[in-house]
Length: 203
Picture 1 (tube, helix red, strand yellow):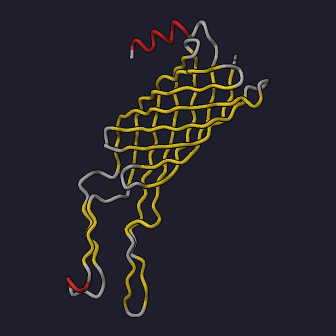
Picture 2 (cartoon, helix red, strand yellow):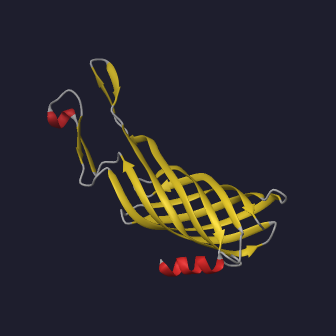
Picture 3 (cartoon, helix red, strand yellow):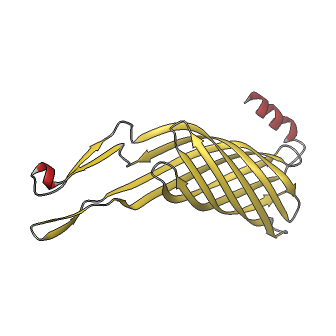
């Protein structure tokens, strides 16, 4: 960490290039294989010819409307006893971005981003359903067991690649594509693809 700030202090004086970038896209949470979204914003400041430090704030939202599906009938009525799964999180990211290719028109690079993540989930560790034939009750019985907390804090890291195309050179506005993968100490994995929109300064 100390080396990172030394490099930033040394090189930021020689380059004023920076970008403000927003991104949004599809994401898949490995716990439960739940589809959802990744969104966020980043500020990127050059400290070398093609190297940038990055800081940003992001969010993820994943839900499965089907969940653990169960419909049952009782006294002529049909009831929906489906357990719906939702996992959402917020994360602070920081790290390094390196552009393999960079000019006034387009750029292609890779991110290495340590992160700190807060996450909340409704997914139970164990779900069991006992049916009337086994319990003698007129309706099914759900048994839910939780061994882990529903709210967690974790550290992790993300690796991403990014291509940007500047469509308005005078204003420094660009659009791009993003793809990545992240893991954390809570055992979660998230893959994502999406779009970026940003503004380049002092190029």
